[in-house]
Image (tube, rainbow, N blue to C red; front, side, top):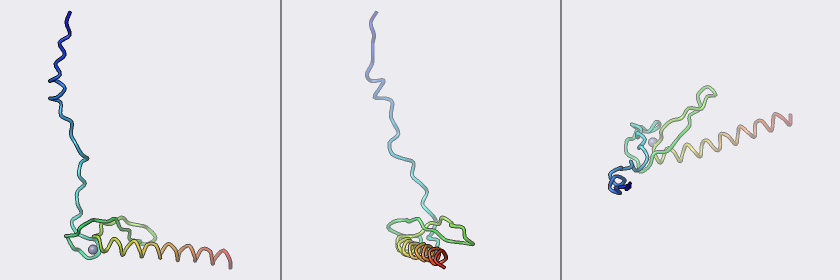
Length: 84
Ligand SMILES: [Zn+2]
């Protein structure tokens, strides 16, 4: 008995390349602009709950800075409370 392995069978199977692209957000949460070199993740604190929002490049950087200082002040407050 002969095994007729056709290598052509393998080449016909095409693999899907690349990851499925995520949908781009409609507009920046903060400034409502629709064109940006890069979309960034942002957070908005509402009633103690952090919400995930899409931000443009500029707003994303601004948000990240704010977020850092916000968390820092929060930590400092908790430290002061422990001391007092
Ligand atoms: Zn923006």
